[in-house]
Amino acid sequence: MFTVDNTLTALKAFASELQEHKAYLSDLDTPIGDGDHGFNMSRGAVALEEALNEENFENVSDIFKTAAKTFMSQIGGASGPLYGTAMLEMAKASQETAEPAPIIEAGLKGIQKRGQAITGDKTMIDVWEPVVEAIQKQEISEALIDEAVQATEPLRAKKGRASYLGDRSVGHIDPGAMSSGYLFKVMLKAGVF
Ligand code: ADP
Ligand code: MG
Ligand code: MG
Image 1: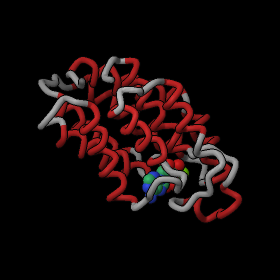
Image 2: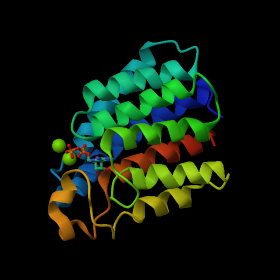
Image 3: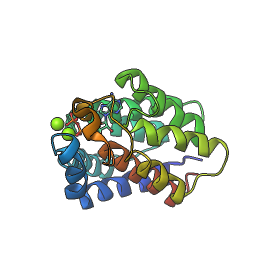
């Protein structure tokens, strides 16, 4: 269940993880992209931390709305609008329910609509989708999240910059999958699932 408390805790922890792993996320983006994923995400993270500390939130939806605005305007690249859309859809869904499955699923649908990627295209979708399924089945765990991230390594990218490399994208973990893994692990740790 999403609450104001655990949503704030999770998103603040997400912001810390992104800053802590800034270099690693950019390293993942170097062989199959333009090496800026860590830079992009940590810019969003710094702004998110500020925005979350500034406001007093009365409901979960407003927290996701703030995250959406911040990510859209600060992250840039492909991942900015994708994460921004996900957060915006999660803000809308959390006006109706506090259940994590439909809320994360709304985020996933937003990413799919915006980016047109499907399962196996080697994008963040390859983490969001199994995570939604696992939450629905109540079998979400850190190991499952890690596995989903690692499972992007053998895939051939069909969307985003990595797709320009064709077969040469094989053998590298997708950076957006890794950052999404951080998001779901902090939610798990905060007790959302
Ligand atoms: P850019 O590629 O513009 O430099 P980033 O490096 O910040 O942006 O983000 C790259 C990540 O965005 C990829 O690792 C992938 O997970 C995600 N991504 C790119 N295109 C798509 C898409 N169409 N659908 C879903 N995710 C995507
Ligand atoms: Mg990049
Ligand atoms: Mg870029």
